[in-house]
Image (cartoon, rainbow, N blue to C red; front, side, top):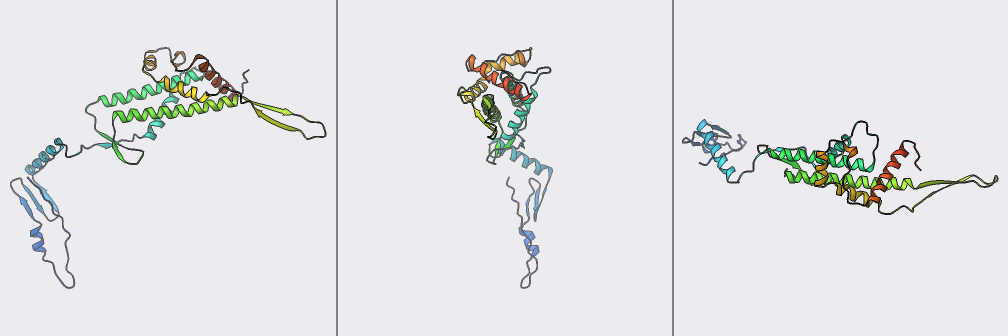
Length: 265
């Protein structure tokens, strides 16, 4: 069955000619009485039988892959996943835990990552869910898949890791900051000079970033899932040396104490 719909703009009387409206109506009229479909002008009247025939045709085309399945636009984007991950890390806190060491923050990151990944896994475990689409970074509308959401989560974790690694390096430099004041004779003006000790070990940022990224592995995810002792008592496995790990924790301890007005020696 073929359905042709004709929509025409009606021409009205002009100065030098008149359009035969009856003839135009007759030309735009099409009838398929076998399926109960009548088209007049720019309107369509479809009987129940005709509607069923149309639905069957559309279903056949959909099964043949000629029509894309309908879906809804999801609010998920690379930017929203980054924001969601930052909030998830902040919410992974334990009551009564005062320490905010490097180890503890990595535990927060991995726990937040695990929770968001589990949410994605559960979402796509529902085979009856409606297909979703999202707005990609280039502005195009693309199909939202489990793989795409996991990819955006991985990028959000990596972005946070880079930021915190850079922050750790800055805190390390602040730890080395030593002000020096030199006083001259009475006749001279009092002068103040500030120097910075740059003898700190190199690679602080690289070590921190490596620790962040290596912490997200299946063994650490499993450890967090099975632990009942809380984040503060979990010892995750990092792909860095013990001395590097101790140094990173010392930098974080020093910075956190310094921000509270406590001097560590």
